[in-house]
Structures are given as C-alpha cells and as structure tokens.
Image 1 (cartoon, helix red, strand yellow):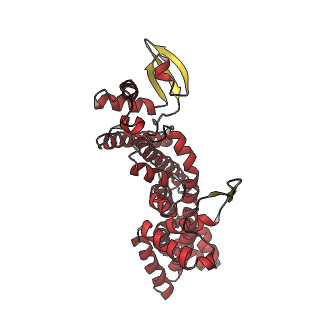
Image 2 (tube, helix red, strand yellow; image 1 turned 120 degrees about the horizontal axis):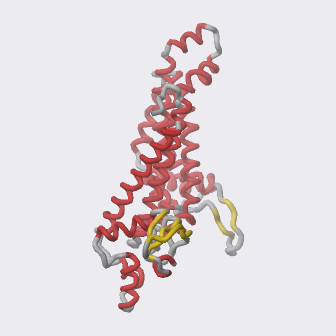
Length: 352
C-alpha cells in the first residue's frame, strides 16, 4: 500500500509540474505589460525597474520560468539578501555559498490590481466554492444513486424512460444556460412563492452593514444548477452498473435462498455496483470547482469562480494563474485519495 500511495503522489507532482509549465507559458505570451498593470502609466523609471527585477521580466523566458517555479516550490534557493527574501514567510534551512535554502509557503506572486498576495485571495474566496461544490456533489450523488437504483429495478418502464430522458437533458444543457433558466424561473417568475433571489452569497450582512449571518437559501439554486450534470451521469452509471450486478449468479443465489429484496440490493448489489459511481463522483467533485466559475458569475456567488472571471476581465494574470494551479492541485489530491479508496473497498483492484 505504501508503494502504491507513493507512486500516486509522484504522479500528482508530475501533473502539477505540467500544469505550472503550461499555465506559465500561456499567460506570458498574452499581450499586456504586467508592470503597467501594477503601477500604471505614470510610474517612475526606478519603480518600474524594481518590479521588473523582482518578477524577472528583464531576463529571458526560461529564466522567468525558473523564478516562477522557485517561487512556487516550498523548498527553494534564493540569494542571501533581505530584498530577495522579504516577500516570503520562510524558515532558513542552510546556506549554499552566496545563496540560502529556505522552507516557505508557495508564493503565487501578487495581484496586478490590488497588490494583494494571490494565495491570500484564494484563501479568502475558496470557502464559497468549496461549499457550493460539496453541496452540489451531495445533491447529485444522493439523488443520482436513488434514481439509478429505481431505474435499474424497473427497466423499460415508463419511469425508466422518463429518468433516461431527464438524464440526457441534464447532460446536454450547459451549466451557464441552466443557471440562467433556474434564476429566471425560481428567482424571478416564482420568487413570490420560493422566496429565492437571483444573486447572493453564503454569508450576508444586515442592512446596516453590521453582523454576519449564514444565508443557506442562497445556496439552493447554485447547488441544483451545478449538480444537474453530475446527477445525470450518476443516474446512468448507477443504472447500468446495478443492472449488470443484478444479473450475476450470486444475486440469483441470494434470491433462491429467500433473502429479502432490499437486503439483496443494499448489502450485495449496491456495494459492488458503486465502484464506477465513486470514480465518477471523485472526478466530478474536482471538476465542479472549475465548472462553478460561470455559475458563480451568474448568481454573483463569492467564490473562486467569480474572482477568476473578474481577474480575466481585468487581465490580472497572477490571480488567474494562481486559481488555475489551485484547482489543478485540488483535482490531483482528490484523485489520489479516490484511487486509494477504490483499492481499499474493492479487493479485485490490484495494488502495484
């Protein structure tokens, strides 16, 4: 098991490294002067030169990439001067000639617009996206498994066909289109009955700007909207997997022994049918963080999606790069955990 986990972690490091390289080159070939975005057109030459030197913009692209990787790495080498280390929160490990080896938090640069550290911006906004993704996945998983079981137990019935049609519709409709329709129907036309609003966040302040309270109702429409596509996928996966398991010999044997139907379904069939569902849930949970971007924009939900879209509109590349790398990191971590879980719950999976 230890070897299996180490291999998955090394694979994850490889993926993150690849994402870093791709993201760096994509955003460094786009038009725009980072220094001008940070300090404006009327800045003095000394300030511009200092910022260019700090970001390495006066060096070749390969050197700039090295600086970016060095900033991101938790263990990195820097010149042993206060100027080169003052932007980090670090612990000095040892000296290497004129340089120093330090342990630090990954440094994702600073926002061009606010000059705030990108990791602080991500930390401030990740809560909204996290709870939106979790609630959407719970909504999709619970209903998806339930509808999939019902559909598998009554194949080719009118209920089965209805669920299949709804699943296809859920897969076909893009999230941003569903978000517009959901907000229009339930927060505009039926607002008198639902009490829901078009926009809102997880936390709200009162009319006087004092106090902070949890607004769960604002989570309802974004959750349903974001959960529709994974719900449709999970319904179809559960249905197909359950029908395959229910046709196995050991299920027929259990029925011949007189076991009750619900015990056969819950204790025998469902456990073996959930493997592809678990894989889908893991992939969708990470993907929902990226898919939440447009949903957050339409519902004005304060999360990583909204801050990333705003950063794209204002050409705030460090924020966009940092959010992209963070989502990739979450995706890798979730997939590693699910690979381990998959190997634990299914003895048929060989750990190598």
